[in-house]
Length: 409
Image 1 (spheres, rainbow, N blue to C red):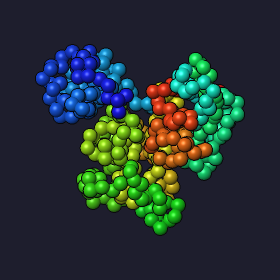
Image 2: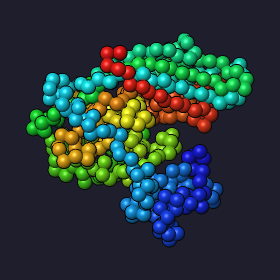
Image 3: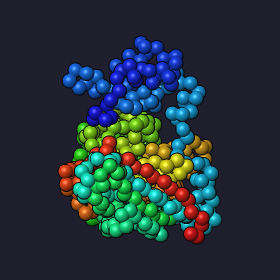
Image 4: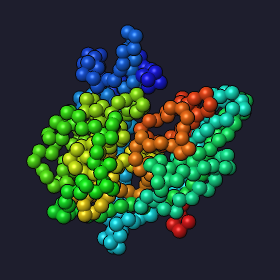
């Protein structure tokens, strides 16, 4: 919490003024009182979220109107897709009828660098680094190399998390470096969905049962979530149309904003319910919870976006009979297009710029971690520990580098 909430009020005010010089002190105070400037009271001192200034403009439309053109461009980059990529996916589907198409092969170098003297010299450090999951959209997965050379790859076919486990002894005054290099082919997914064909999921199907149930502390059918569901769904009974209503509501009413570490939050949907903003994981978990409540099976999926920008990302899948499991990215949301299948692409479709690492949230690592996790919901940056306990994110750095390989590599 101290790492996330470390700004003073004056620091945040100066950051806001740098982004929007026309904002007045009175306006800033008003937005602060409305809860648009995130802070915590600690022992009588008010500390502000490290991203509070930028988030103000993401979640408050009145504040956004004060942004300079340069600041707005910097804060509101286009969504992490390119319309020409989606049109290539549509073209390939129309030409071949293949639901999974447009393969892209990536070589990823992922590194964790533990800072010198984080542990005493000679102590064994244990690390878990992300690795691609063998999904139907991912294939040709190959561990090219690792540092150290001997690593243990999880049985990712059965495990919710795909990882490479590595061990190395710390050396005095030197960083302890772990690295994996892997190849993975990722394919896009697109299949036109006819709402008239969609029927309710079979709640008695054991393969679907867990994806319809509450999964505390995240998917909880609280009174607030139930009331919100009634507001969104109304009298709609068709599962696809229900999913569409939920998708649009979350995209339009839970704007993306940086969030503090999930380990410091309770249920992510409850955070969205009370704050009406959140990052991709909060948006996704809210969508999933509302889907499950309405009898639509939903399961977590996450990892990395590999293009056009490269960053951690969360999304999910929902089950629509008779189509089966289809991907959903509520964070990318509604595509800015007047063409219906382009506009709704991310409700049932997925681009190929992904490396999926997780097929469920809050899953155990292999081999088991002895200390508490740094990230209790997701697994993307990795985890590190030694016999003295967990090594938190402020004690090591990570880097993700990706290169697209030529076709047929």
